[in-house]
Amino acid sequence: MHRRRFLLLASSAVWGLPLLSSCTREPSVGPVRIVWDRDTCEHCKMIISEKRFAAQIRNPAMRVYKFDDFGCAVSFLKNQEWAAQPAEFWVADMSNSGQWLDARQAHYLGGKTTPMGFGFGATTLTGAGIVSYEEARKAVLAFLE
Image 1 (cartoon, rainbow, N blue to C red):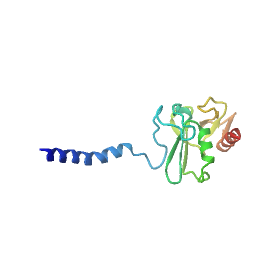
Image 2: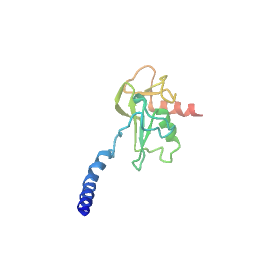
Image 3: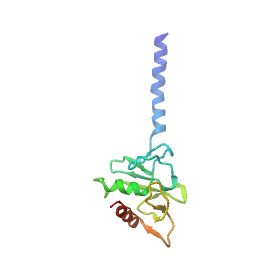
Image 4: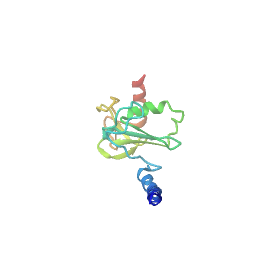
């Protein structure tokens, strides 16, 4: 009787393992799921809760780092040996909290109240007050000096 119970439990564990791992597997490209109010920023260690200003970086080894503010991502990136070639860099569209934008192709609007006070929100808009990725990145780096 005990052996039968053990075999039943063992087979359940073996068969359930692939199901469990498939539920937690992240995509190998593109942004990953952020658990809002749970995941923490890789740079400042604050909880990521403001969906409009979140960011993600995937390094060349395909590890994903999550951030609560574009400025935290830029600050983190400047200290990485692979900084010139991150595999991917995603930012949340500040006007559409469900959409991710390629950070290097997005446009940025300054003067926003962001989680860590760097002040830039990503957008697809262009026009007055909107700057490029490179301009926003340089402004964050200047702020850090």
